Length: 164
Image (cartoon, rainbow, N blue to C red):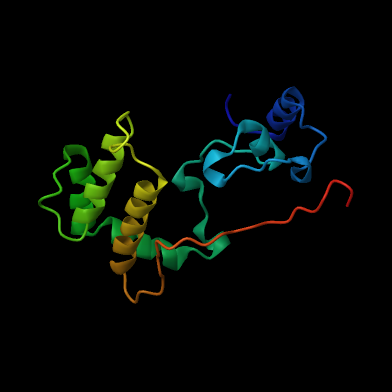
């Protein structure tokens, strides 16, 4: 089933799933973020509209002008562009800053279809490749004011009870 793009679609899907008049508080078995089922997603009361073209984004409305300039510098960086080209060829040997990232991503892609227990890829490999990518991108535009870490923290939420 597709994700609802409008409030009306959400309402129809929520009605069909039997969650229209329920809240997240009523969900007795909340799944982790990587295992959310469709019913739980609907309880988030979220709609996912179509992606709009970049030309429709008014960066001044959100104070993003400076960030857009930084992003343009990163996108025009020769090493980043070599990385993008290498994604299609899987030629990570010629890369410097993005070498280990591409290796990690190739490992993830190779493991997606594996049935052998020792070759399957879990969430750790995916997270590692993302963190490596974020570190490399962040370091392309000093000063480095961001910190990307692989250590996990537990996020918990208390949605109250059905009686509150």
